[in-house]
Length: 329
Ligand SMILES: Cc1ncc(COP(=O)(O)O)c(C=O)c1O
Image (cartoon, rainbow, N blue to C red; front, top):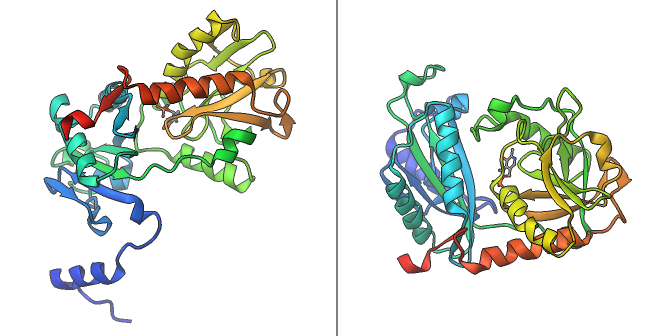
């Protein structure tokens, strides 16, 4: 077998022939690349150089942010977390905050979408194949705008099934840096799919519950307390942080008695009246089963319903949680 050596024209031709007509690629609407210095709308050119340390070492940080009907949800806290994560691995974000926001807005506009996902990556950048970050020519920014694929409505109506993860939990330092080194998270998603579950939740060495692949979780106990696992071993999710704030309103009308973040033992799930997964793509998703055991009545409960409504209102309201795209058209 002779493998051809391709020139530029051959590569162009092969890319054209191959196309990217698969369902996933057809949902990628625009990509900004600081390496190319521009935006492409063609998924077949949405590339990252193979020697970018993001590719061969997972050396980079990322965020996934949604925009709904022309409003970017919680852009500021997402960008603050991006800066925090980058700081933890001494990675320079190549644009200042103002230019970063403008670049995000222009890439969204180029996508033509009013509702979608912003997938933002800051990489160590191209330069050699070592682990040495100083070999890089400079950090890069890649922003991909994709369609937003929400969870199926029946998952919200009926609730989802969870189990306990066998994947070792991350050290606190790594759990709190949203880096592109996400192999434990990948393996958690794989085990959930392999076991026919929607999610698994990891456990630390002391038997305390942590988080799921890309979601936080919370439960309501028999004393109507909303309990959130301490963020020492989990990523401080933007959505759960907002949920904790919104939940204070449920304390005023007596639906909840307390909201607290603390170490949560596995056995506390057995007495929970409600449980839910929380994150950017799913908002508040009720859990009705954990390791085959029913949670509460086995049906989504009132706290999940209330919190879902509050997040939905937050998304619509154009409050300080959102940035409108409309003013910048
Ligand atoms: C490990 C992990 N935990 C929790 C979350 C939920 O965070 P957020 O609400 O900011 O999406 C994410 C989000 O991607 C995550 O990757």
